[in-house]
Length: 256
Image (tube, rainbow, N blue to C red; front, side, top):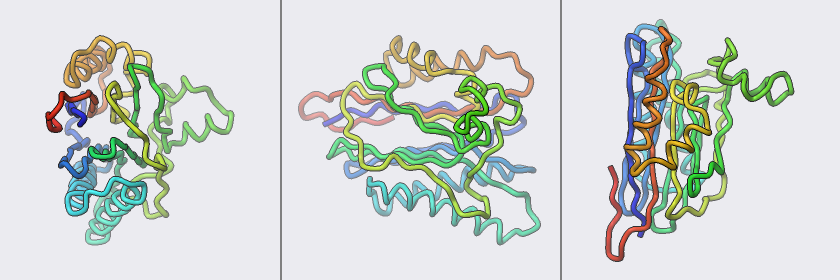
């Protein structure tokens, strides 16, 4: 049995409100972590992100399935919930949100993840980065087309423009990891909003992971890098860390 250590941080930065939301739901049948970064005027970004998180967790709790189809269905349910809210208030703000979710089957030791927008999921194995999601953003599309380098994704003036998001009227474009990925002791997941990864690059994520003694310690080390920024418009920043360790014989899964 694996020991899953979860920690999270969500802070307001220099903004008037925190439009990020995150949460997780776990059982011996399945585990789900989700993070959403909302946008919209007059607090509608808050509502969008909260709706994404609550919808995903409620749906997963009803049927803790950990496959690719389940991940897609969860994001589609979040899209339906936000679009329903927008239709009920046609004169409201154009609220929308990113979404990233991680599903782990604690019995099969398998993980699946999916995302929409520029909230990212990273997978580290023995402190080595082996996977990171690709943003649904204008700058990422430009880089893919050969009109910029990877470094510009953190500095481009249009880096916040998304090509897909929960709440957009167009057909939802999402990415999913595909077939379940086998996981084990020594693996670590990081789910984070753009207000986090914009200031903590992948090398620093790795360095902090190597030095950390727990999920909470890993996050605090990275958060100190974000906090050191002196920008007056620093965004909300949120992250979830899940470190996987081998539990001792007879030990059940421990989360939180």
